[in-house]
Length: 177
Image (cartoon, rainbow, N blue to C red):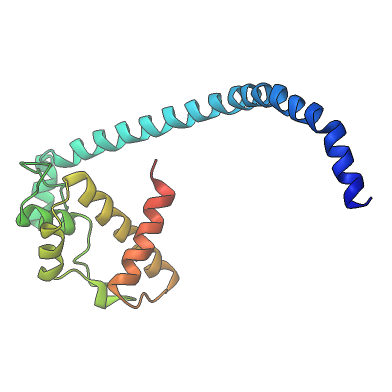
């Protein structure tokens, strides 16, 4: 078909095609909305449930441990149990509270595969000065802990804090709403 033939076809059938598209598009939109809206609502409900479960578990972690755990710790029969710290102002944690959150997430650990990524006081100061909320800091620390744990399991060497940050952002993007 030549260009002239295409132009003639567009002139002849173009208005009908355009009218059909205008009529069919809203119908297709409604069908797609009906099919996917239910799935989206179900996923949002699941996310809300997981968020609520996480909050409940965090509240439990903030409770003082039972006395039998204290007794066992004093006898040395179990290791140190890290408790989620209470943050006085969740919108602006203090430097000490940031340090305790980092300790809770195990970021001060001596990593076998990536020992150079263990938290130092400078890291605590950095995160405190960012002025993030408790939830934002927990999200950052949790994702870094996840990356470091995976690296320990797989033997992956992470070259720098920047690479760790990049991998943590990927974890957050895949795990957040």
